[in-house]
Image 1 (cartoon, rainbow, N blue to C red):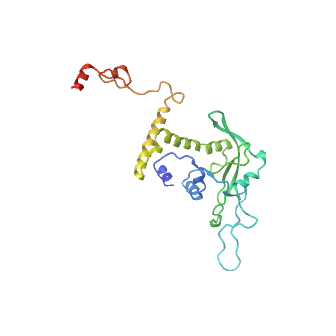
Image 2: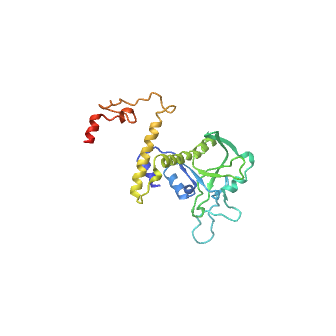
Image 3: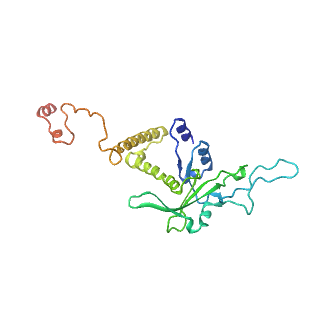
Length: 260
């Protein structure tokens, strides 16, 4: 949350927060992101409790006689939220839509998805008003025994399913960036023990990665084949290219000087 606040304060253009289940299951984090005016697509566990579409917790109980009236939302034995997986398994087969979100290394990436407008059920007992509705998105690949990915999202209510899937799957880019940082630019090579040293190491790796991406943008087909690079400096007098025959031919005068 501190990183998000600092990014907004620094004028970083706001985007959609993409969160894996390790963080997405944290309802306080999701609420904090919404409090900053940002939308999110948060991975959640299959056991996350939600209210069925068009349902909400019961209103506070009315009291007769003395005492303050109740303010907390309620549940009873017959009015309970369900796990996201339970909701998914109740759907008929024709409720799932096949969506292709991008080209893979061999074939287009395609799977089946379904979504509903639901209310998260966490902390109902502490609320006086039901949680706002948001999207519950679930992926169930063809041929699999059960769904394998779940998301809660505050993307607009009128967003298309294809656009929502595209946003959810953009987290692949984050994983790809980490992979390239670790394998190509040494992010995973740090062996120190202090935060300061690691912070410096990670910062330099990220700067190098930014330079690498900037360079790739100039290479076709991403960039124009005749991208301007500015004036090239002249070679210094006596320049000998590395690995050329001239680089290994030592003049006699220089050789004699070294021998002396």
